[in-house]
Amino acid sequence: MLTARGRGSQREVHQVPQPEHNDQARAFAPLMSVLGDWASAEDVAQLGRDLETARDIQERLLPRGLPNLAGVEIGVALAASKVIGGDFYDFVPMPGGVGIVVGDVSGKGIPAALLMVMTRTLFRAAAREEDVPGAVLARVNRALCRDLPPSMFVTMVFAVLTLGAGRRLALSNAGHVPPLLFRRGRAPVQLDVGGTVVGMFEDSQFETQEIMLAPGDLVAICTDGVVEMPAGDGLVHAMQALAVRIQALADQPAKAIAHTLLGETRARQGGSLRDDATLLVLKA
Image (cartoon, rainbow, N blue to C red; front, side, top):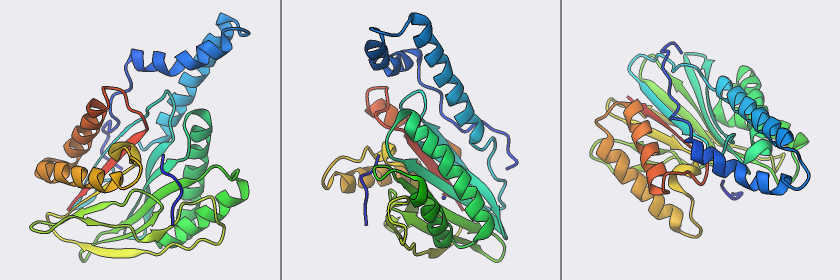
């Protein structure tokens, strides 16, 4: 997760395969060692069933399909590093188009999962009241600041894609990994206009950036589990490496790009993710 700084009609499954059984065993192993001295085997088994139920609820809260957008293709893949995670994405109807959010909550496990559900609910409510991405993030931020402990926060990117006379993308970034814009024959551009993380500073404001998408443009929005967020200036190199891989895959469908890159992320980390990872790709 980031350290604090400074958002259908196609019925397809767009989540990457769930962790293998050995991943789940590793996730439960520390808990088993702690509880083993005082909890019964049935207590531990019940806790495991409860976590599996929580994961099922989380999966059901994710969109069951992708928006059907004329002239714009969407692909998305998500994988949790534990049984339950803190990454999320969502689509909401907006005037003339669709709102797209990708978020990452601080921490892991049950607290992160609860905050993820809370943030998604607040986001949907805010998107019904505002239509400018920065204003939506500001509304979510104020609500979270009233309820979150000081140690928790959320990073988010919220974009509104408007179709019609051209394809306009309005976007705001709340302390999140910068989305990448790819245009043929040009160097990738980081889209980081916005503000700080949400849930920490009640008076935070979030700027909005607008771009026109031309045919062939590609926008990639990911969480830090995809770039692994090493300390220091490691993010620069991680983002450069991600950009190179996206450019190499740019001719593939958006769904294939998202799933391929998330699969490469898992392989690079030895087959087991160290952090939740989400990648969403828009292709005009």
